[in-house]
Image 1 (cartoon, rainbow, N blue to C red):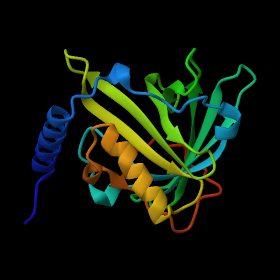
Image 2 (image 1 turned 90 degrees about the vertical axis):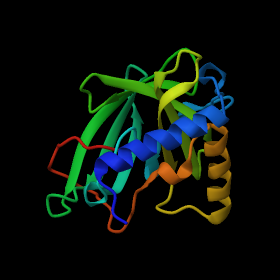
Image 3 (image 1 turned 120 degrees about the horizontal axis):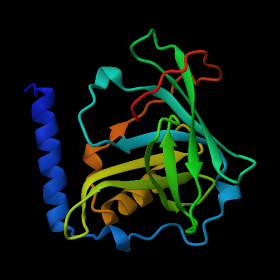
Length: 202
């Protein structure tokens, strides 16, 4: 059976709604990594999977997608993102974003591509050396639960072990998210340099 993009979006929204109804988690009750240490978090992370609030055609999913976090002089973070563009010959692209610190360690603000589209960047759980789970609620329901979720799973390596995947699945479940709705990011060739400065989804 083939599903149209509109059908997929509708089904995704329905599944998210059903999951939320069965798991009434208030966003203000979500805990981030205890004693979050920024300096240990800096460096390169590979994007493994991510949840978006709409449909993305698999043909347009970026590959070899990585983030390199470096501290700025003002204390905030520069995020240098690299990936392979599936549309333009799978060539490499690169762009920069800024992550702003807040008074709560582990709860930061992400200025995507420095275009003013700022979302939360909450490090829900990380061991610093292997994995990180990041969360944002894009839109709240009146009861304080989340209507539109965004989430990302990162790794220090292009792949995750089965044990780590099991741990991450547990974290995702506790966030009332359905992991079957996550998009997977493949890593094959890496991207060390990129003259193209386009922005991307993901």
